[in-house]
Image: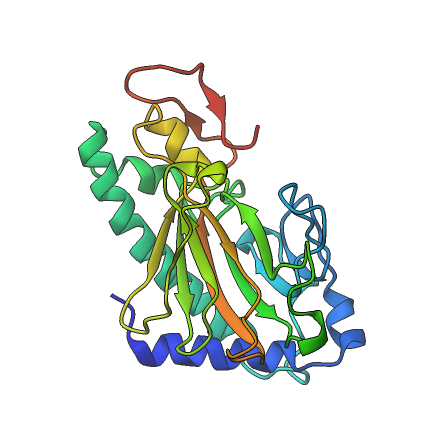
Length: 254
């Protein structure tokens, strides 16, 4: 549902942002409470205890005041990213409508819960740049591009670039099994990860996807890796409870 040319343009625009000098990006520093802005090597996963080897820029529509690069720094950046975010939202709602029907909700159940006109809108487009790898660091323990984790949203749409692999998933959320499977980049496909919110909303019928991004092997591409995840995260005031009411209701904010 999203033309490849739009995806390619979003990646090119993302690269333009990350090519800016650190002091310029630092003007738009990450606000953790609102999940917006730029950060670098700041995300530490409980699974590793070490910072992910990446930088990122989060776009969450209601909270972007003062966090957009200026037109002089990046012409067209804001308009292009918001247009791509809207396309991702529309596609995410189509996928979630399928889950809604299967779970016994009405078709638009999750669309109402992800209303982009609400001040409580929490869905996020994230631009990711994994830093080039120094061959001397390969094989060091605890160094990951992204340590193992599940997403806490409902559904993640992930765009990958050809030739820039490393994503792995572990079925059944069982880290001890070590049954990691590589998800090779395919520009004709969007990788869909179920998140913790949808797991709870489904009374655990749908399991959130444990995933990680490993470091390259010595014989692999060691340059920058870019990806674009869109997190369909329910509005703050949406109440999460599955059809069978296995869990007490909880707001998406909580």
